[in-house]
Length: 352
Ligand code: IPM
Ligand code: MN
Image (cartoon, rainbow, N blue to C red; front, side, top):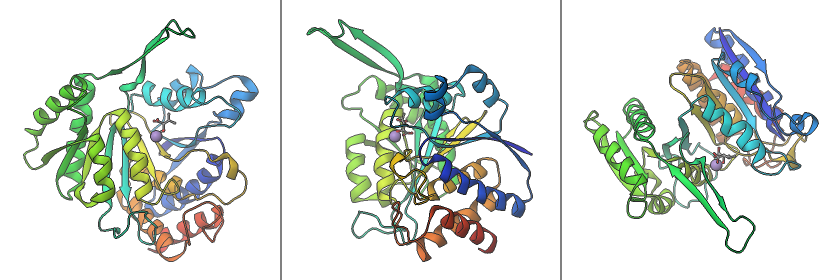
């Protein structure tokens, strides 16, 4: 019996989560597991109505769950940063979800802006550190609002934090069993403290994994190569900020935000899975947004829970929908409504 927290959030979040739950229900019947959903309505509407963002009591409740499925956070009437920091980042930090796992895989039938590259070329995974770096909020202002103003934003990198992320990435590369190659994405030529620590940790841990080939690339070069030679990559490990940036690039080459999903993982605790696109408020309530990223987030969630077989079926069903059904992944251009896409995936999960 899994206890699954569901936080649909803002904008189109609730619509895509409805489709993900549809697929989850079919999966549970097929794989014969039981689950209980615990619904949370945190997000922009609740904040505007009550002033509440994410109370401490909710964090305590989250600790009792097995996993969380998140829709999207971000509301046009709320100043950017409040909900993102107060809900998404706070949950990542409080639950110590130190891995942000983001597969970049081009499914058949999906348009990639990269000419001459296909599904056989674009299939890698980014392991992003998720609790440190520039995201910790260390720093401050001096003489704010004056001509002498100073702003400092510090990147915090601990040996323990880098090492546990790197070790997770080595393990993941071994289990993935593709090219057995792990690339550290850094900036050792300029960030000579932060990435010196990362680099030493990376090659120290490498000694425990003689079957995995350690590889290094600067973040700017990675941006080139994700576009020019995506087939070079198997698993990429990097810090929080670089991981944020390169996974948006990754999402684009796999077909965009309509398909990109990720997991905020605490391997020893409570993890949270999400479509990585935003809340797309302009499409809210129209039944035209693509739910595949949310469905893929549910797939990653089931994989994490150990339901590997049914997770594979969900992925196969999503691929069948992209290759045989959808005209495009873009909202309003799929040739089907949000709920129809969810219905097709649910149906294919049973048949594939
Ligand atoms: C992401 C998002 C978040 C991040 C924002 C919304 C805080 O861009 O999940 O990548 O920067 O981590
Ligand atoms: Mn991002």
